[in-house]
Length: 390
Image (cartoon, rainbow, N blue to C red; front, top):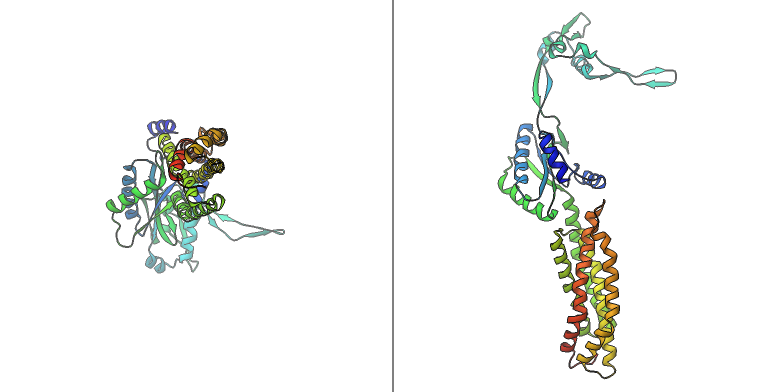
């Protein structure tokens, strides 16, 4: 994508380009009305002011690391024919406003009355021959019938026909004019980019009275998902700890198993950092899956230690023998999950941006949590449970 973008920029510098994928493009379109990850909507009344603000916002966004495909929608201008009716002159010459409108519309195509052919109702369109209305002078010489039916007048007698430059499109939302600055993000996480961009834009771009700015795009989904996870994850962790206490019949043992979770999370974070992958919703789901496997391995080892303690062995000796005895089950559980996620971790096909963070978190977290389970957890057990019999 980067290589193709560079070639297009060199060969066609005047063309604005934006890169996406089919599913992502449709989702972006549904979220913000544009086919990019971020859409900054500027609302106001004056088109020139909107264009100026759009250029300033685009310039600020381009200066932020990670910005790509930044461009205001509808940038530039196109020539169009402007017909300004002199209502007083039209009334003086006896030309009705509706007749004027019909003639002007017929330049591009005026919807006429439908006609009935047999049982079918067929729509009609009244349109001048393009050869007769190809220039402003030809349009100015169009004849308009008087309301009283006494002859006709030229369009130039009741209207001023000029050629002006104007915006290629006028967007509206909620009955207000809107200009959208679109952008994609590459090489960093979307949430941090939007946070930095909003701060930079609010500092460097001041909006006139009556104008407002709205940010939309994928980051809204990310923030809403993170807000839900902030509620769901603590509840899930609390329930896990309660189940561990019920299963092991000891708060101390449940705490030892629970130590696996921050160690596993550390491994997942380091793996994301080493691969240069941003934190995303899929990475968050990977942490949840990782916590389940980490707790399972901890329970396997602690249960084995508790069984050996019942035979009268010391805490240190029981922990050492349990680590040897449960080495294969713990490694098997970790390897099955890790090896199963390798194809997702190295995926480059469509959907890889979802698969890679999830798989990377699980693989990196299992490496650190397995080392903790087999090496650190027995030592912690021998120290913490030295004077306790589980």
